[in-house]
Image 1: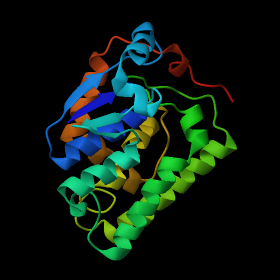
Image 2: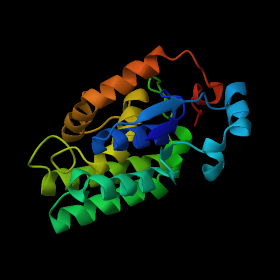
Image 3: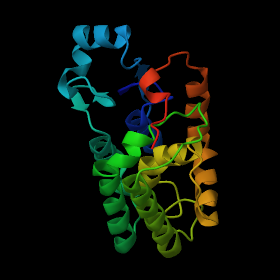
Image 4: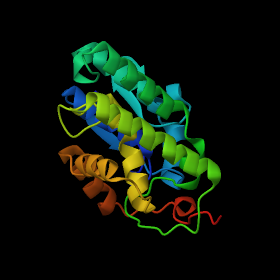
Length: 222
């Protein structure tokens, strides 16, 4: 398998696809392409590997099979290695995990817009939009419920690391970058995610990158 991703410092969806591949336990090669630069534009024009996704990342190739959406990548890999590697076994826990992942996949647009992922930075925001605060409260509420109901088996949302943590890992990064205040249980969860060996590998690679995307370096004043 090969996984095409964007800059590790900025690309939250690439992080999700990469963590999903790591969670599968299967070997994969990764190809990193700098987003929004000359190399990116040249790669989009010259490579058939990106054609199915219309130039978006991540994109996973497995022989002739191609998957170009992070949630679809999770589903595809779960089909290959077994659902239990990604999802809780208990029906109620699995139902909540799937719903939380779907909500992350399609929602929280204000948080994404105003707090883009930037692993290397620590930013003091001048303020937050009401919609962004609403997104943050909603996420913390879901984290609290998942941890209280299903998190007894370990430090992650449903105890052991799984698809829900894959999808909320970039949110952990955003909360740290922008100094978002969170309650103690959320701090403990964020620490568990941040210190996970796969996250540490991704963070180290992000910090070693020399690419800068200016549009993600300046916070929006409110």
